[in-house]
Image (cartoon, rainbow, N blue to C red):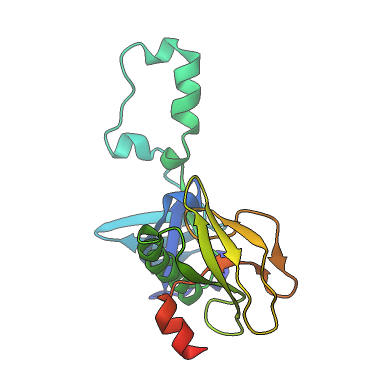
Length: 197
């Protein structure tokens, strides 16, 4: 993230250690030669010009302290000091609106995945989250440890290909759309999407 592209008042996302742990929303409140300051709730978090939090001792700020004897156990020290959730915040370099769309998509998708049953028909989509998408129809054939979907004939597609999806709805195998990239489960209810297509 190049903080020179940010402006005061702009909404931003940040993540800690990995996007896997989710995002926190903040607002740009100050830009200096050394970096930027972001208001999150009632706290100010300072970042350098590369978008990395300057106050990396978050464990101490939040009152997390190692157990007695910690200083003598190198293994536990290694785990403690490398835990990604205890590392510095990173400003997200994806445009705010695009990240918001992805977060909303993920939230809708998780609700749909929780209700899936074997034999249920679903849509799979590839391409941008907002427009220019390509759709194929499938049927759920397995739910754990991954969701497996068998492609059904639809339009000019003959079907028959098996696709695997992680439990967040993103494609977990190597079969991808040649123009739009990996497939993902559609975040719109099946009947609603069918009516649109």
